[in-house]
Length: 242
View (spheres, rainbow, N blue to C red):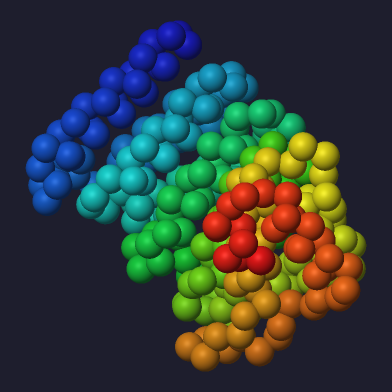
């Protein structure tokens, strides 16, 4: 029953976090089977609460020391999150938790979500689509793209850095306009503006450590939108990114 599954997820998160933090170098869960167990309990479910709780379980464990990130990438946790984003498109919670999971996994390139993941290009394109369509979780999707754009490994699909893949997905006239429309939205949140400007800063800055020669296109309208966004918020992070 639903309440049994939800309580099981809650207790699982509680005890794993408690035990892992009490002995950071110890092994609390051996192997990768826990990823499949969570997946099996949720994949066929159309219940938003169960899916949200399963994603929250993945997100919680992805922030712990140990091999949790590697297990999630290796055993289908990312594919599950991508599928649930599509299944619950338009929901105000599921896509946001999924994007938060991608951020957590992308922060550690070596053991987490990186360019070697088999579906990294479709994931980047899905995040770009989420942002362009103004779907729930767009601020987190922007932040995930920002982290991808800092990684050094090259994609198995394109043979280039993730920075290049993010640029390729964003750098169309339509997408550029949509990205700056985000800055001009009425009552736009500060975190959204910070995420947009941080991503644009990263994409407009060439790097010497990777093959990254294509500079993100700009224009007077772009510069004006950035200046207006900087004036709108009293935020050091926004001013630095701008």
